[in-house]
Image (cartoon, rainbow over all chains, first blue to last red; front, side):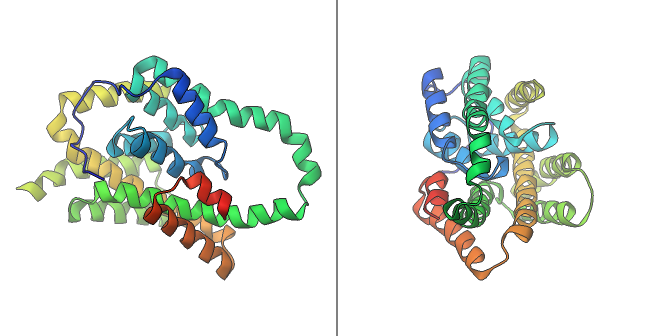
Length: 191
Length: 78
């Protein structure tokens, strides 16, 4: 995977059309289980690697913004849709990504209660939950490959991890701190 | 709506201040990676309680990285 050139353009991706976006998001996210955090790696693969709607740095910014805004983390899709195709892209991506889960929830809410004790469903839960956590590792790996361009960024990441684990500092401040520190200390690596 | 506003601001800033924005975004990405690792830990602590669970998580991560197959299929196979 080539390194991105960094923030560089205001042009839109040309490989996004409304119908294709909805189809892709609905079809792929239909296979995603485990909630918003579990879907991050899948979303990253679709939007960055497969369709190249956004760069890895755009994606990281989207995740960061999703952490600091109210609501589910899947709102990331609004950012990705906007970066890829403007307002219409944001609208289509947001509707597309929430449509299927909403529909399934409405349709299956009562039936799931009936089958919740079924061994197959129980077994699925036991296997899927750890797998979903493992998949988050892929996203960290992908983001890390682009972010860790020097020791400064490794320090930022370690500090963010420590603050997130051992303090009650809001993610907003952690992300803002990382951004400012990167802007100030990052150029030192070049000089 | 707030996300849309942030997307617009992000786009404008990265175009106007490209030189500053690149290291800043790398810093943001690094911080996001750190927070995600913390999220993994928080999710894993109550969920992964057996050796089999650890094996499944590690396998899912390794398979996803090494083979690059869709995470959705990894979860389905597990």
